[in-house]
Amino acid sequence: EWTKLLGQNRAPTSSRPPTVLPMSTPAEALSRSPPPKRHRTDALVAYSHTRPFGAEAGMVRTSSLSHPTMKLTGHAGSVYALSFDPRGEVLCSGSFDTTCLLWDASGECSNFNVLRGHKNAVLDLKFSRDSERVVTAGADKVLMWWDAERGERVKRFLGHEGVVNAVDVVREG
Image (cartoon, rainbow, N blue to C red; front, side, top):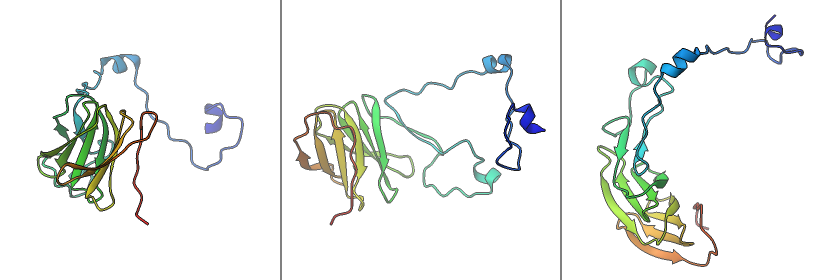
């Protein structure tokens, strides 16, 4: 009985035997090369490779990106935050270099704007529900509210006594 093989002394909770995955030998594990390292200042937009994709899965690709995986370069420091706008048309990345870059989330993912104003790393960011604004949280103890299209700061929220690690938005009212 399979419960004896697994060393279990109690009855199984399911009538199905557990799924057993094949294990690789130590020689096989050592022969595999580690995945290549990615430069820390690059944002990476990717589809999951854990499931079949495209024709193998019987799916049609609906993304407007030119490639399933894209490397976005432009920051001078590590990227700490990455967020799509609610419409899925714009991607914003926040970095240790104190800037946020706005990317067109279709085609070649071109950078179309830079948000500058923080004096320390941008640790988190979120889009407003209407996709017109971005709020950023920084290690400089400041929250900033931005016009996403024009790249201009709308408001600066001061008063935190420590680093602002996270931010979120809610509906008005």
